Image (cartoon, rainbow, N blue to C red; front, side, top):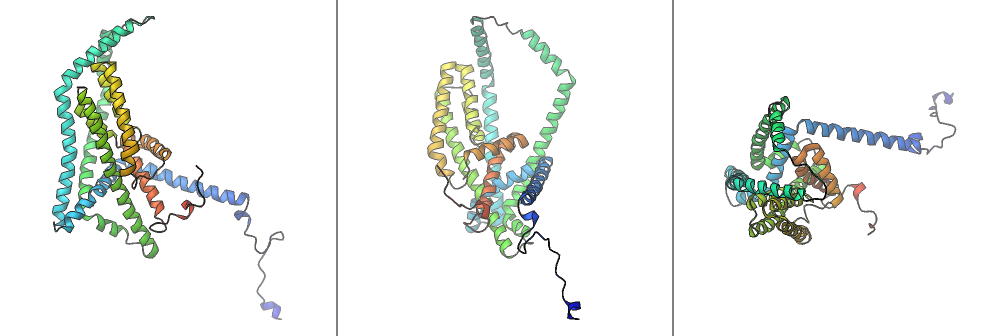
Length: 377
């Protein structure tokens, strides 16, 4: 009679032990589970990347505004602690940033306009010298027919391809100024209400999740700010060193080339070197091969001094990434976003690694990334 009320035994496989975790937790089942999880993560990343590329007109200005706000945040906080009203400190910082960026563009345009005729004349003479040198080679090289070149250029200018290209250029210009206006507006609000905006976004979180989100926000601002300030110092050193060398050699457009070196230095590993190659080409066209070789030597010397002495000091706290990681981030950013993507990819990668390092505590990385054994040298 009591057997009628006994709880029935759960169905069990004859070949499974009571502690057997099941087929999906061992062997091929575990591999299949991990594969499905990996595919789900990759799909999520792909959707995120697709969304970013489709909304690049919003994503890029907001990201640039966040980086600039992180860089100028210490100055804004200092002024507020000194009793400067919040809105006044915001306007001072914003106008200062815009004045610096506008001044850089104005210097480039003004100097290029003042020296453009000389550069064109020097380039023409350089092309003539190269053509004469090619004629001295032991094998025949047909001279370039300039009439054919101009005729081809005229055909292109009157073709439909040029019209489509011109329309694309107008569209790109409109997108640039739209993004610039959005960046300025977003930067203003980040400078004015950045902490309150972040605190508003953290409303859904409580307890441990809230503390983790706070650490992520603080780490993001710290890495972005440290990166942009450190890179600015390194870029200024590169620009001054190469610019002084170009000025001593009396290379045309020395100042614009120095400014280009400063701007391209925000692309790690390759930026300053590419600008140095451009300076060497200008020297080759205007002053000959000896001056070009000297410019190459100056670029190599400046890059070595910056890489071995200056960069480890000013970038140690903000950019703790291996050179291979930087190269992969640069390649990915360039493919997805061109030059702007190359500039933004490395600080974004640095922030991602910084978030991992504070995931479980101020000095405790996420569990999978904790050091478990010494790396072999």
